[in-house]
Length: 91
Image 1 (tube, rainbow, N blue to C red):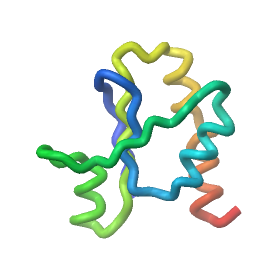
Image 2: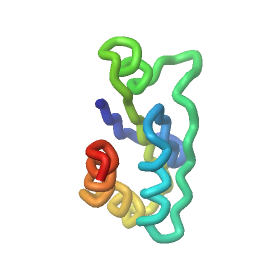
Image 3: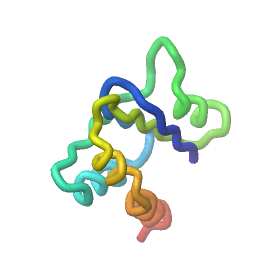
Image 4: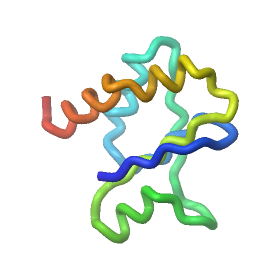
């Protein structure tokens, strides 16, 4: 699996991953709605590379330039990773 974090104009998750993880983020982070967009376009993104070259899924999280620091910290906490690992392990 590959994770790519960087910034852009607004928060966007480009994921070809289990929708349950994104739903878990929404359920865990107060007043948060995941903005999911496919990572397909004129320029390749990292999650496409993970799928095409190493036969694995990838997630790109583009942090919005105006996203408040508290929100970045909420999304980037170990809790998000723990939720992901539990889903991957079927727990």
